[in-house]
Amino acid sequence: MGKNGLIILYTGNGKGKTTAALGQALRAAGQGLKVCIIQFIKGRDDTGEVRALARLGDMIELHTMGSGFTWAAKDPGEPKKAAIAGWALARKKIMSNHYDLVILDEFTYALNFDYLAEPEVLAAFKERPRKLHLLITGRDAGEQLLAAADLVTEMREIKHPFQQGERGRRGIEF
Image (tube, rainbow, N blue to C red; front, side, top):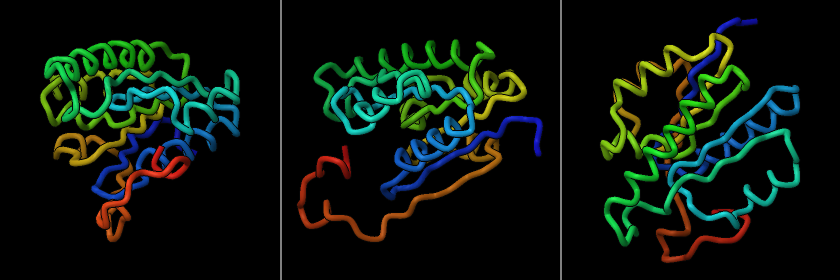
C-alpha cells in the first residue's frame, strides 16, 4: 500500500469527470477517509450532487465556489474572482492536514483561462501533506498538470444528446 497521496486527474471532452470524482469521494468516505470537494465552475446549489451530499452529513464536505459557466458571466471579471476565492479555500483545505482526499472539480478552467498561476498551484500540490490525495477534474488539462499527475483518465465524447439539441436532464447532467 502506497504511503504518499496521489494526484489524480480526470480530463477530456466527454461527460463523466465530476461523476467519476463523486464516485471516488463516496468510495473514500466509505473507507473512513475525510473528503473535501471544492467546485470551481458550478455555481448552483440545487444540483443532484449537492442535495445527495447534504444527506451524508459530515462524511463529505462540499463547497460550491464557482459563479456559473465562465462564458455566461455578466461581469467578465466575476469568474476570475470566484476562481481566486476558490483557490484560497482549496489551498487552506489542502494544507490543513485534516483531509485524506481533496477534489478540485472543474479546476482546469482556472488554469486554462489564467485565473490562477499554474506554477504556484503546482508548487502547492508538491507541498501538500504527504498522505493527501488530490483529484482534479476538467477539460483540456495542460502539459504541466498532466506531468504532475500520478493517474490520468481521459473522458472521450463519442455521442451525447446535446449534439441533437437536447437540454440537460435532471439527475443526469445536474
